[in-house]
Length: 113
Image (cartoon, rainbow, N blue to C red; front, side, top):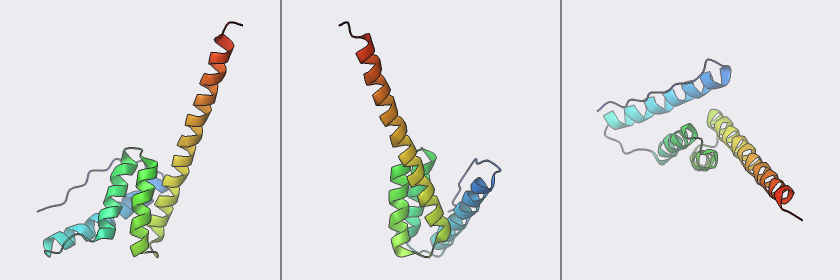
């Protein structure tokens, strides 16, 4: 069995760090598969976090990565990814809040007095 992961990322430094981290996780998973080992829960959470991140489900990605960090708290690249996901989740929540406020203001302005 071969583990195949196709990732399209930019050439910026953050994307490069993300790509390198994913390649190392996939290499670990492939080694485990070939040696007949069951998937390490931390690796499983890393991969599930990655899948969520790729679908812009920032909060879900951060949750999976936080679970992985409980097993491996020294994993600084993963900590950085989790922090990035949390920041994007906050940005997304702020954007939704601002959109709701704008919609309410627009409705109030359209109401006849």
